Every structure is written in structure tokens, then in C-alpha cells.
Image (cartoon, rainbow, N blue to C red; front, side):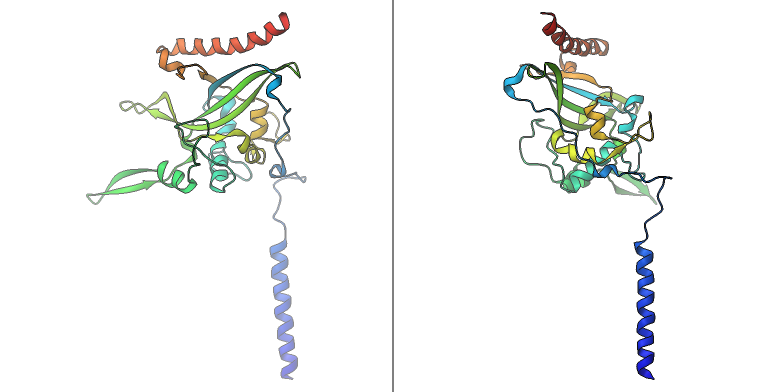
Length: 280
């Protein structure tokens, strides 16, 4: 009799475990009325191979992207991860912490030197402290880094004319999140931004390609951050061009309006070179 009871208890336990396992293996409800392919399975798009011998002319420039502009807002939202969607800063932070992407010091945007330690970078260097008063006692509070602090992204890129394909093309070389400074009196943001680190774009493309971006034009067409950068779906302003003294525009032009005109002149120079090639 005891033998049959033991067998009975064993079967009941087995059935209960199987039922629990079946519950765990059930797929979560999908947030759609049709099966969607995961953008996380995407790989970066292949770009045409370029040889040094094919480059007739090139110009290196630095631009900044202000995510407060409407066209650039997909880089900033959502402020907190929502489903598969994350902000560009969150994507970069996650990739750096996971060891998939290396961050380099802002002292040199050529990626020279040892990569920065992820934990030290985000938990110490980019974090801040504040002093609050509790029951008349001042206490120091640790304020962790928040991706929403980043309102500017700098990009380093090179424009070139490819004689083999007969086209003017561009390649992004690096991306740098930057913090906007505040006026000490008014507390308002100024137009001065300070980079926090640089990452090589080619190395970042795998993480960018697997991160969907909000597409306001068509919800059905899922795009990635890699698509956004490669297709140039952003608005940027030139703040520096390659020159012997390595100075940014604001270092030799004080007036903000004149700086915009200088940025426009540099852009027109790139455009006019392509037109002149075909004209002559």
C-alpha cells in the first residue's frame, strides 16, 4: 500500500512540475495583431568598399546634432526604455557596459589610448553629487548619470569623392554624446556643449542596427539607429573643419550668426566641389 502511495505522490509531483513548466514556457502576449520580425536580429547594412586610390578629394568635418529639434527627437525618445525602444544614449550606454562597444577619452577623438572603464565612466566620472539638508544636517547625495542629460551628439565624419563610383559620399567616423552647460545666473542652457566620450561609429553599428528607432512617418516600417545615420535622417550643424590649427569655428568667430554663416560656407564648399567636378 505504501508503495502505491509513494508512486501516487511522485506522479502528482511530476504532473505539477510539468504544468508549472508549461506555464513558464508559454509565450508572452504580443503587442500586435500580427507577428512582427525583431529588429534585434538585424545586421548593419553593407556599405560600398572604398580604396584610398579611388579617393580624389576628401574633407573632414565635425557636426553637432541637437535632439531638441523636431527632426532629431527620435534620437532622444523614449526617455525611459519602452518595450524594444530606447534612446540613442541608452543604446550606447548599454553596449558599452556589455563590452560590445569601447568608449574613448575626449582628449583625442582619434581613439588613441586605452578604452575607458565602463563602470568607472558611468558610475563615477559621469555621476555627480549634491548636498541636501535633513534635520539641519548636510548630507552628500550621489546622483547617478541619466541618459536624458544628453541633448547634443557630436559626429566626426569625412566627405570624399569616389572616382570609381563617380559619387560624392560620406562616412561617419565617430560619435560623441555631449552635455550642454547652463548659465550660472539664469539656469538656462547655453550653446556650449562638452563631450563626455567618443565611440568609433563602425564599431557601434552592430548595436545601432539592432536598436529600433521611433518612425513617425510610418509605424509599420521599423527602422534602426543605423538606418537613421546611414540615410542621414537628422539635422546637424558644422562646428569645426579640418585645418592646421585644429580650431573650432567658435574659437575664431565670436558672433553666433557669423558662426552659422561660416558653417554654411563649409557645407557649400563640399557641395560646390561635386558640382565643379561634373562641370569641368
